Image 1 (tube, rainbow, N blue to C red):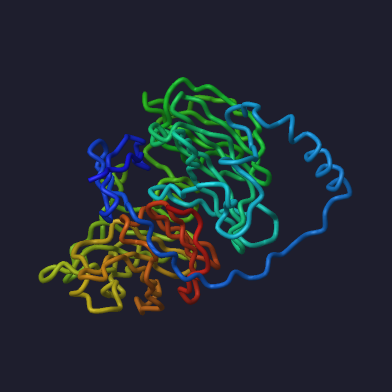
Image 2: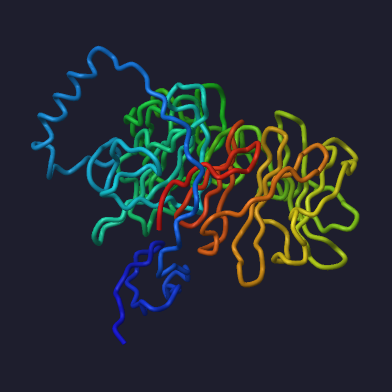
Length: 419
């Protein structure tokens, strides 16, 4: 039997694969990968691409770019710059990549929702991975919320094998990225261009909202620093367990959502819900709605949700099974990933049996009523890593894909990334 040599998409270890098998498990990091590419999901047609009038100097810029292109080929791109070319960022449409690229979405990271291109529709920012030859580096990229076109991409932030040590956050008009070498980089959100670089001398543990014009960075060596968004200047601040008010790449970290039951909020009590074992809860600071998540107890461990009053007493308002399908035909256990936004609760669950795969359920946060329940394409490749939402779309991050659904109907609009 002839085995094929490939690289693990998670840790880049060399694997020997039987080409007749559907999946292979990496013996180094334990990641399970598909050997055969799943059939492309049916995608609802994207709305027409909106174009804006070009600035007077746009034609001159295009001519200069074409003239300088032969010179640019072969030049090494400085780390952290916004660049274009084969295997790295380019002007794209559709799924966010050109035909010559192999771009994957990094599925365990949370998508960050932000207004990037000024069209009034929220866009999405997140981690992507470009595969070319034996090299693999992770970048942060921005995508148009309507068409999926890639707007810009940073230069390589970290080698794929070490990118788990990197962090990213959107604050005001800036993207802030930390890398494994203890450096912070700031990028202009509208263009992706570098703004400043600061050396803090330690890896970042987390990023949090701070005083106006700043973010707070907590380092691995237990320092707490206020970082000025305009300059990158770092100033010590008092230690604090409070964190939030910022879109980050950590699942659940958004400007308006707080999470009960997260490790650094272990002392915060969760509501008691009859017939349900509660594991965590989300509270939307904008609407005041709160939803607890868990599993049925006693009985079969069906994934459940319950709305409650977040004030003293935590009065339960409704209790519902998350799946709209037969709840005994899904994998047991409380959901580990969920989101609440614009009065809607989003939670994935996995279906058992031959068809398998995952589905995304949407409930009304005020009543618990099921609004829609839809399959997540190619979700048999791995667990859902994160969910985020804007006032129009729901973004589901899993494996090497980012699926974009209409928040109002659950219709699949487009998929960013590929296997």
